[in-house]
Length: 204
Image (cartoon, rainbow, N blue to C red; front, side, top):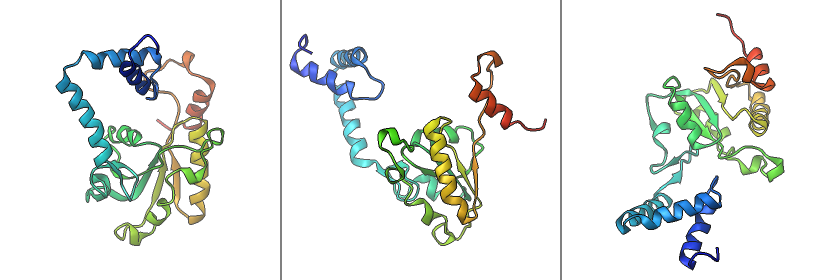
């Protein structure tokens, strides 16, 4: 960053730390910030500090929240007999957008990945087992755990691990169906997706 003054170079370096942001994108973001009025930049910086100061992990489901327990865990209208296990908080948002799921959630904040040194201890699983006891779930017995990890190698490994962990408890552990996306053409679908689509076929 010898072409830029030190403050600009530092700002570009900080943007490059963000996931999915390379050198060119970092430069564009830095110069966008430089062109904005001071009040806007202060508002942006304030939002960053506020989110770090006020957002915590829900002690029940591990969601990111400013109230603990979170709004999902305390919502009396939700079905407490079903828990959907997802990788990240933004996966919860994707499930909620369907408007068809009304159960509870458990967020892992990652997936198993031996290549990156991420094992079961690095995932937020420790508080899942206590939740499965009715006395810790407002007296409601858990009927089903839906594993909604991503359909990739790490997501599959995580789903299989959770299934092995929970099956001895006699609980119904299900996996979200995978296969052909709506609107896709068969000629462009890879063999793994096609295999999943055939495996998860249903009567019409």
